[in-house]
Length: 317
Image (cartoon, rainbow, N blue to C red; front, top):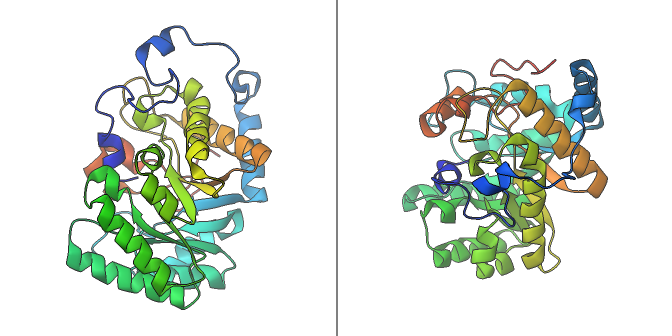
């Protein structure tokens, strides 16, 4: 999640498909919300379900290999990438990466060696020279056969870093440079409604869905995420949709009525994957690991979105 998603909602959600996300809704919610009845389950039962879901393997995990105290800007070495991938490899089918420079360009190849599929991210922003380096490295990864999906940009329109025309040009360049590779663009779900030319240009729609950052209390979060997905379906024209990021922080400061917490994060994960398994939804969960460097952009909650902690220990168990 980039800073842009959070900052798009300085007040209660302006993007909700229904009343979810607005204060009046929370005062008198309708009955019949989807999701498991966690009140009827002990913590031990929920942990056992958590383990079973991981044993069956989730569709995908958002992967950054940084260790505690590290952040983007350092050069990553392959040994560290392999060690971090080895922790999650038994529990996922796909990984999503976020950059193709500073050593991250090795991650897709290593993931393929481990039998994982890859959504390879090209990190685009305001710096055009850096964009060209990222683009060239990402295309090379794809040409070498290590990108199952090439994700050209992440929340670029949300942040306002590039224009729609500039993004369309990058997407088309990627398609020409990496024929046969599925090309997508990652952004908040509602921007695929607002930018139909981007939607039309993508082979696959990669949507970020964060009820937490839209001030949504946990008990309504699954319903809200399902509506995010349905809204995208209505503009997708039959194209595949992947939820490229969703998650819930296990610690930190509440974001309005959205409260972090160990139980909320565990229950959100369970609800997410029970729904995904029931309806065949492809979801890349954010994130594999807790990452302390994210505090600078997201506040204290930024460090606690992982399924594993910063030391690589499975949380909640």
